[in-house]
Image (cartoon, rainbow, N blue to C red; front, side, top):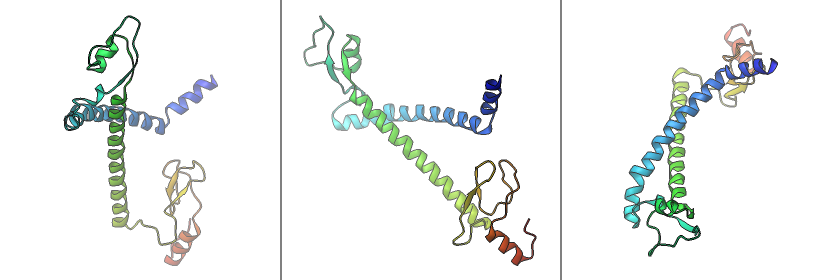
Length: 178
């Protein structure tokens, strides 16, 4: 029973739900990017490079007994696989590498935009730390990253000790430190 209770705690935590949503959205995003690569980008690239489709680039390693290699070789990967040929599908690998590059680039741009918006919000609302003061710290209780000047953790709601720099600033401003 302890195992089931621990599993329920784990499964119902907010981070696990967020992670599940992230994986689902990521899978959908991957499907769209693979379609972009295979159906939109690769045909023109293949046309320019002289090959109609990168996914049909392959090496035949072995043919089953009784199967002869057609004159001029197999024209498509599907034709080679239909007769049971063992193949190295380097064209499919190239397509997948291109899809990975596009996904990584898109994620980089999304994160870069989010970071830029976050910085602009910090500047607009005066939340930038003074020079020499760190921007973040870890909560002493839940170990989540939080703002350095925070006096209460937004995740576990624990009361935190006031950093020396914040206490000094608050005492200079005539505010209580706790």
